[in-house]
Length: 291
Image 1 (cartoon, rainbow, N blue to C red):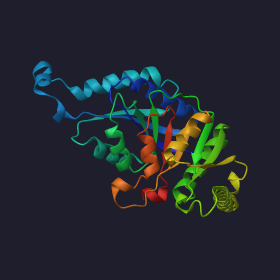
Image 2 (cartoon, rainbow, N blue to C red):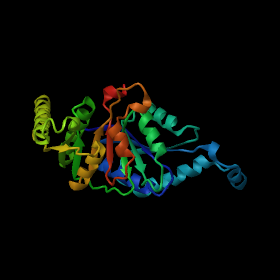
Image 3 (cartoon, rainbow, N blue to C red):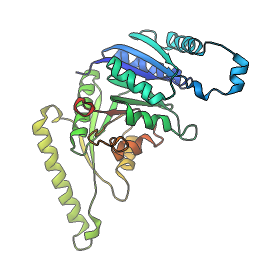
Image 4 (tube, rainbow, N blue to C red):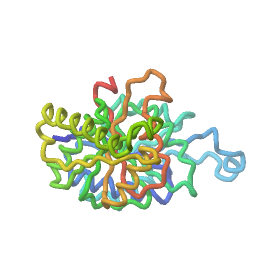
């Protein structure tokens, strides 16, 4: 069963904040969440001299906190216990990582605008530094989640994501599907026929899935699809399947097993995060990976 003792919501004072707070309310109404922290960091060093001359000694933190509190009052009715936290630190990522550790945050909710509106640089930095799972809400996404897709590559990270997806499916009574993207060693064509190679590849992967079912009986009845990459990347195939199956949530496991921060997400989650998709993306770290 999924329970969230503490959840952090990152706000940036843009038009996506209202939707993000409303989405958080929807999460709290469907999952056991004990407390939510609505967070914003003011980079005072970036305030230009013109601002200082115009507004003088205004208490900016207090004004921002009041603005966020107003949004929360409008959009979070029926939510859970919550608190607004506004800080003035030079490094937003480090500040938020500290909050995750201080309050035992298990899940961070992060908004994402389309690439023509934002570079997504801060979001990418947060994904690399936050020691918790992250739920990314694109500005074009819907709150209504009825179908969940979980791609797996049989790694511990993807199996962890699958187990969370199954718990989510059971708790909310929603549809879950598993997919695996496989690639063929095309350098051996035409020595080995393509038809034979496809048959052999699917046989091997099906065997892996049967072994996975034996270890995790709870996923035995979950629908499963084998999809050939066929000239496209794994991330591209996943996004095509998202649209084709009209899924409302994508769950991916984060590796967390590389000591170099820039490499610990895995290439597929990083690529998909940087794509313009209309589906919420739940990037899952295991407790073991975080520790």
